[in-house]
Length: 162
Image (tube, rainbow, N blue to C red; front, side, top):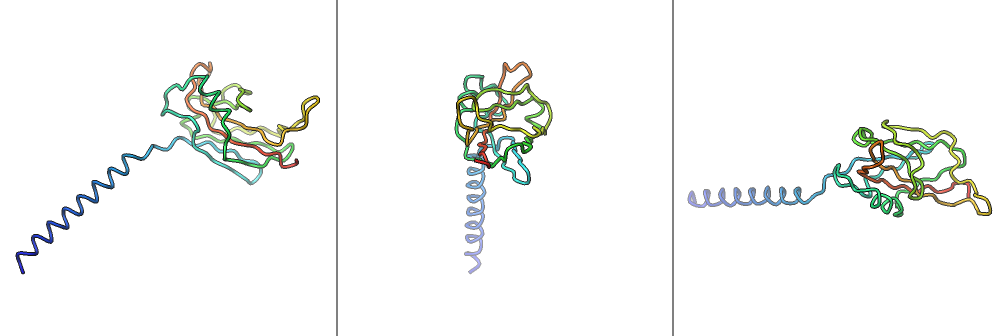
């Protein structure tokens, strides 16, 4: 009977080593999460990881514009005239970020982790057109000159008054 104990211990040691190896393999296959951006309207918030991001490497303006036009599944309702708040991780703010609407840059870069767009009326009808029911906004991490772009976070705003 004593001869089976060392064998059982060896089996447990081999099984434990195998479990640790399998766990490390699974962890190594996981992608590092990207920094987060959050959009808040009233008491509602939606947060997202980057749509396009290469861990601090320049993705280029053309790729960023294409990425900013991609539809987001992260949606928030926006009543007319409500304050739109954007929050970003410090990692995004350190480089700078700007707001893009429907794939077009509309602000100069900010270096803050939080910015409030007071009483924004994003859903105003343009001459001869109906007010849009949805608008795609993007938080775009970029340097001040706009020559380097590092990430794009997309959100869909829905007109709560439509």
